[in-house]
Image 1: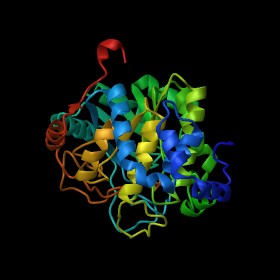
Image 2: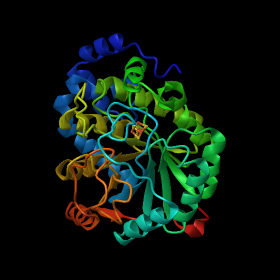
Image 3: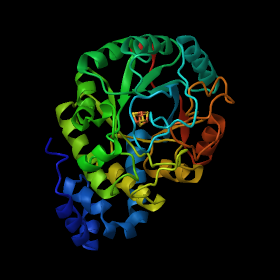
Length: 368
Ligand code: SF4
């Protein structure tokens, strides 16, 4: 796919050559091109964060009002047949015991999440195709759809038929990160398991859109590779998807690597300031798209980001299977959290910022 086969050397040369005047020019425009997007993520644009924040805040308000949608992840299984070097669930991590939830345990988790006031849930699982099979996921989605207004998925890639099955069961959102768009690094970071197939993963969002999913989330795991190159690839991938699958809405997530047991050395750390610049560039270039931020980031940063970029965030999250119903059971999480606020505390902080936490914006009466 041409949109990811980018000449990285030419790209870096282009970034270095972008002037402050070019950034100013892009900031003055109403509709931004891919060249403007590059201007806004360039090193020269780092001095323009106050102007970018101001403009992004206006666009965010125009498209999402004062609302921030809240969801919670529900981890189903910490077993995984892949060996992603940066992840606590990788098959090579023998340091912790793993857990997979039965349908009954998923129900218990759902009840515990619902008690927090959450009405939108994201099913997350390692690649565990024998236990967490398509049939199991279909049943789980149907069960969860009886409890929550909105169910979305962050699972291993499926074919169109598989996605269609889960869509019909009631899951309407899918998030799948490419992790890194750099093919060579991707091969190095995924030494074994089906996830080694870069192209299969890259085409998964399109297959989900083909199957009818309303919301398609993409992103890269920030810290693996130069963030500017990843941003260009994500933007190009999204533009292609938006053109071809215009009925689906795009969502951007910005997961930064957080420390896990086994201490993976982050190859290309992304600072808070760089992360903010990247998010602002996406808000300015894709004003109507959802932007999601998880509890990987700390509460101060999340409180800033909701003012100009982010319109969806997780809250009160547990990243351990069974962690809501039995918080003391099991320690193996996919990543570590930097924001440990409760759902109530998040909602209270949003109120102080003049924003409203929204727990439900879909209704069963719409037949969804
Ligand atoms: S990132 Fe996903 S696929 Fe890779 S080891 Fe972790 S859970 Fe498995």
